[in-house]
Image 1 (cartoon, helix red, strand yellow):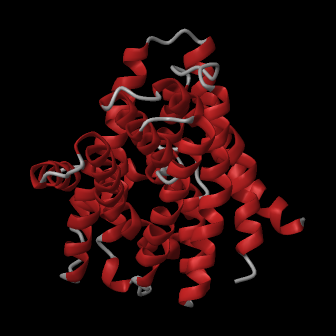
Image 2: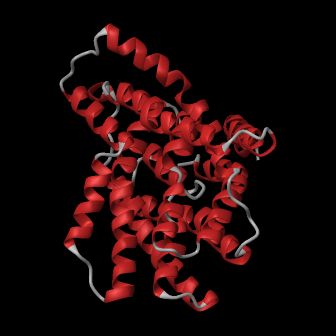
Image 3: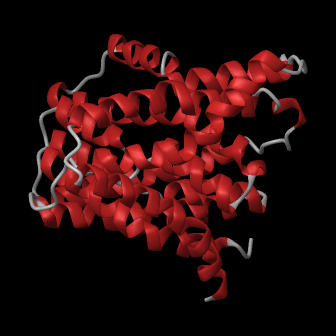
Length: 313
């Protein structure tokens, strides 16, 4: 219990910032354009500045066990299959809807929530592991769901579709900043002061600013449509995925820090990318939107619980 209370006390201020953003948008009557503009700034400027500066010191950071990718994404594949089976057997969804449903069970809000919680609860030493997952996350999981949807529709998958996905991932501001910062870090050259100071100033506000923006974005969604499907996605996302990833990490013999980092990421709320996929394929938009709100609320308790349960190694 003491371990849970410790992690809850560390993580709860972060979720309060999300709640603040939600309240500002829902009850403060701020127009949606404000949320969209602030969100664009946080995602394209503030967070990339923090990540680039952090990764520019990569050569002096603790080494990362690359097997964490196998633990995390291997767990994602297993849980994705479980999600499709649940969607088929319980809700009788078609192949496209099954794919979106299953994606909701594995695609975490790694950038806005993951970076903030990992930095607060596990420390900066966990951020290289988190960054490695973020770099590959969108490419692997978007490709997975695209293959699943295309196979459900046509029984095949196009190389052109994969190329489009890869190009979009590599030009993503978050991924690009991590890669650029890592390359700078390998050069073992300190950032010039006139660059380092502005990046530091932007980076100091990146986490709280991003969390407030996340809350403002969640205020646009309702939790009424497809509630049973939303709850099922939340159970898979917040319960099944962290358990499977943790078991794989232990089976692979990952060090404690990497094990906690990947299990933490697996325990996070559903990411906005799932809603984007639901819109793109015109399937389960309501249940996915509701799942985002519910999973963010529930993860304020379940994520500290997961951290407490895995803190023993």
